[in-house]
Length: 169
Image (cartoon, rainbow, N blue to C red; front, side, top):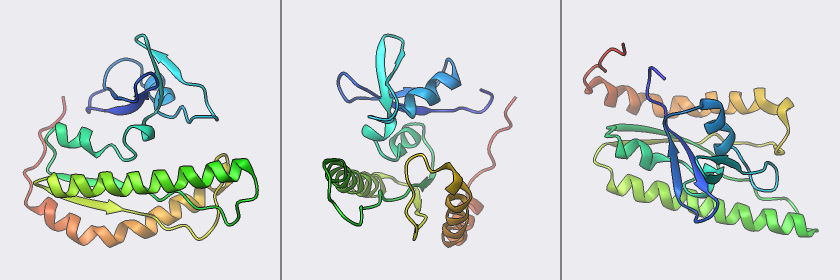
């Protein structure tokens, strides 16, 4: 890619984060989105890779390792089911609790250790969204658009003090 791109996945064998920055973008996206129980893991370079969320819900560490000064971290909490009446809902509730705490703790650690700015953009959802509910994508985009302006003033202030990026050739 002309502009550096880093896509994260998780090594299914040992839980390590894998950063994919070369090779097929389609394969990297496929591996990064191999959501357990929904999509099979993907084999890349001898490693069985699954959803990057499992090793770092919001891969801020990748940006920090590459020396960025300002991180805009976009994400959302996993919703909690309104009722738990089946083994599947029980598993989903446990997963949501774990994912939300992991997301918050990772972000807190990065905010404390990062010398630059970390701006979280957290859309709020007042409607239930199911995993394959693609008809709700316009709603998701709209909620993201509503959440972003809250961070625009601090982002504008931070970017005003940053040097212009070098042109990509």
